[in-house]
Amino acid sequence: MSRLIFKHETTFKTATYCLMHFMVAIAVAYALTDSWALALSIGIIEPLVQTVFFNMHERGWNRIRHNHNRRYMDGGLAQI
Image (cartoon, rainbow, N blue to C red; front, side, top):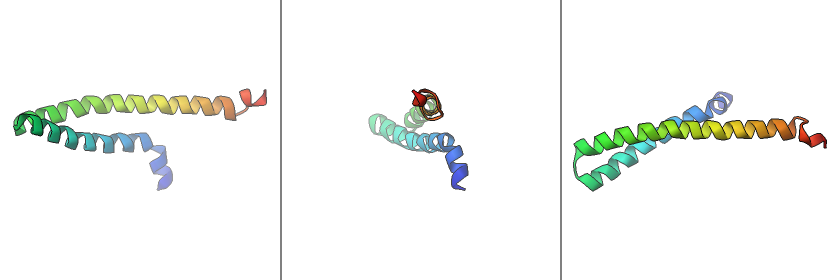
């Protein structure tokens, strides 16, 4: 099970981040507007957009880590 979670870590992190972000965004929007309709509108749209960008950000960092490990650990510059 832990192997499955590690393999899909970015997906799980994105999903939990999204849920947390929905709750925070709705709460903040409600505190500012005192309107559930506005709070739900803001609290749904903004986290969806932010979650997409978080996922791209996380995948980019994973790619950088993978390239670094391949270059320096798999015999690339480590042989110098």
